[in-house]
Length: 355
Image (cartoon, rainbow, N blue to C red; front, side):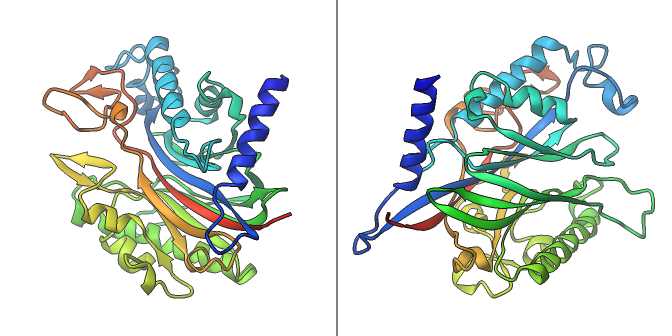
């Protein structure tokens, strides 16, 4: 017990003392990771959603049994355990997730051996999505404290029976006693798919983006200084209308307006870096976008860097799909992989007065 406490204390110290910029010897810099991961159909083995859930049950086409389920839990927990850096030794402060069936699968995930010591906490809400998949948030209570949670349904008047994932908005305090706290809001998304065609379904994702805008406007009306992060599987790339026009997230950080959004993953995609691959071409659907208060540091935290977590162990090493994300199933066969999406992460920094 003492050894575990000491390890956590040392990790927190490293987080706070990440670096001391030259010429600013009276300042320390703390770094906080904010990640997103589409967990690709993290279903339990119980069919409780009729025909939509049959596929992920022992009687279904995938023969989804306990062995496959627990292997996936083990794989995903290992991937999360590897999301550490020298400046974030405890891993991300928060991790938004999508394609989860219920809170139970997240409870199993955070209890897995690879990440059990992090004591990750869960924010979850059952969405009305027909397939029964939700979004959620995992957070390290040493680095983030939840204040409020509100879920927003995507209403589509033209399609009164349209059901998809709700958008989850979690407002909390990022930091700890050593660093001080900054108030941030995190909107976790999984926007409507491209089923029926990219162009034909674009208007639904544009509606999802418009809901994001409304949520942000409400947050800023209550607190003009709040840092806002919108993250998720947008099912669109950074340059698509939903993200670049309706949300208004820009590629060049210097062109971020107030209020406005900066999308650090647009330049990544321009360089050929993606998080999801379709017919040999990379997309970057899994985005983490920050508002102007996180660009100029108005909320106390400031955007520093972004990355696609494209480590080799997450990729297929041979065969027809060499270089693709190593998913759970491929061509109908169980491949004992991780997800068809790669995780993404941004890093926020906070100056801390030297004691």
